[in-house]
Image 1: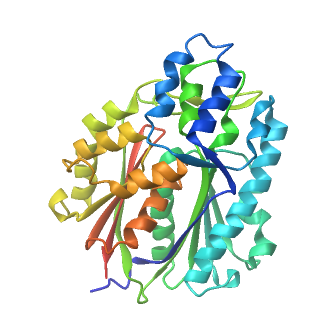
Image 2: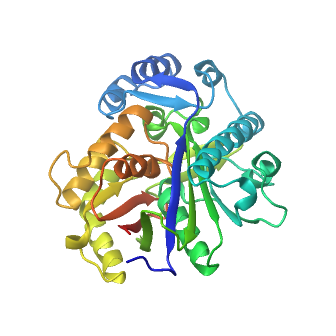
Length: 351
């Protein structure tokens, strides 16, 4: 039976830029840009081959990335593309919920791949038809965990104002962080993995929606700031991958998820399907091991990774969209790992 005080998921929609980059083309472009300047480049070619990625979406045509770019160029590209993706993803989510922009009481916007002040939801206020009294909550810095943590935040805001309609939008343009000047393994890994995308959800209390947010939680490990994040310099964002994420996830994700579930009065036995952020092929295998799943159980995660790459925060919601369309189990645990280093998890239960 539905809990009238909890937030229900009224809709979920995704969007991606039009520019498609096959992984073979990404490999060729990276070789053109780095092989003559980075002695270890050829040793890193297997990174491109073993990611599990076939294609990715990019906010700019491939030629844009062949010339050095600084903050002004990256920011201009971020604002134009992020605004367009916001309108597309949010518009789809509103239509699926049979709502208009003027029906939304609060907007939560999560993005960590560009800086926008005024923030994105303010920039598209007129195009989206948001009211002048709409409440705005922009969030920066959550990285890959932002899709799950942002959805949890939006659900709490909906629950705090019963009957209100909360729109959650997450947009990440990871490819804008590709750097010609960074001759590092981390930068090469980023060029092999990252893509761009957006996702949006509408939440509200009560109603006849199929799914409600049962609970959520986070776990941050101390002394792990070096695992993932941004290094900021005059050229823009530079990716930080100082420690291998798959073995960390394999060792530490299960106890963290168990603790989060315990906080909701649940155990792993109550979870019908894990819905995971697919950071890469090795991360997916590590999560299957951590959760004691059969190899191949995270099938939608592999499909999303193959088609879109790692889009950071929106990626888990791309997976969730496919899981929800595939007659899922009665309870889903949506999980992601992000800078902090933090595990974020949210339970969705069928009403």
